[in-house]
Amino acid sequence: MASRPDTDDYLSLFLNDVPLMDVRAPVEFDRGSFPNTENAPLMNDEERHRVGICYKEKGQDRAIELGHQLVSGDIKAQRIEAWKRFVARHPEGYLFCFRGGLRSRLTQQWIRDAGIDYPLVKGGYKALRRFLIDSLEARIESGDFRILSGRTGTGKTRVLKQLPNPVDLEGLANHRGSSFGRQVTPQPSQIDFENRLAVAMLKAHHHTGGPVYLEDESRLVGRCALPESLRARMAESPLMILEQPMDERIAIIREDYVEGMVADYIDRDGQDAGWLNFRDYLLSALDRIRKRLGGERHKQLRSLMEQALDEQATSGRTDAHNAWIGALLQDYYDPMYDYQLSRKEGRILVRGGPQAIVDWARSAPAT
Image 1 (cartoon, rainbow, N blue to C red):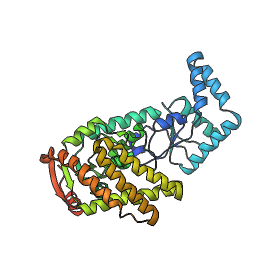
Image 2: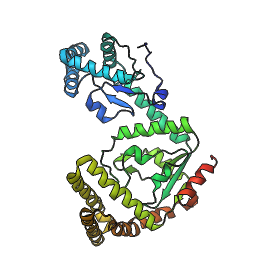
Image 3: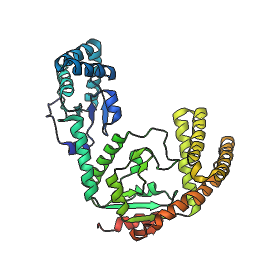
Image 4: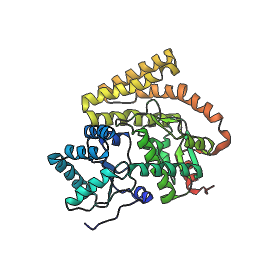
């Protein structure tokens, strides 16, 4: 393999989805890393903990000595083999540690001793993270945003993906943004979400250009919080209002939150456990808004939901879910949305169905 230089071209790394090997400990990786990054640690969590204590008590030289003792022999050979596998799969990639210092240099040296030159990211995680934080704030400050809004169940995410330059906040957060919005796979950490968002904004600016289209969201998308600066810009940006008839909205909700979710749970957990976990997901989501619904309305909706689940378990049919979905939309979600929209009337650019929104966005000039 021809030798490549170390890099501090952070923009190119993120715009081109360059594979990255994070040699920090798993606990550090889990707190937050970057898209297209794999964890292949120099030290595991326990080894890192022991070296950290040694560093505080006895200084750097003794800590380095302990690190070499802990990562030696078969353990060292296993780590090197993991790095070699990454390099073989991603010859165009780079490695990094926290600051681009001792751990990444040592990893680089051990790989070189195995006959492979592999470059590192100068400044490591800290520099990459700072670059994304600064880039995101710059994109938020200077960006031209258009917000796709609409009542619950209008299929906003589906339409968003057809617009000229979309950034899918719910996709980045792996959550649909409501009490029923969780997915079968976990959400990213807050840091991971912010990093994903920053990369998506960079790509929207450099690859596509023009206005960025976002779905109207509250401060939290599940447990992932939008940056306050982005929320402020979204609150003053022009709106596109997606409209759909009630029967279509019910069908979309049923498809996404009932038929799609039961399939996802069964794929993950198997037929029996998947069904039970899906049932618990749906009932728990309704229970989470019990106080806002009021006791009697919650009781009525829960009874309708349980009947629909029983029918689905017996026959496989999902039509019975229409009753609770329609009631929840009409009596709970629509009044909340209509109140919020009444305070935004002056910002509306266009109203209409999916095709009208897409056609308008594709023909609208940048502001």
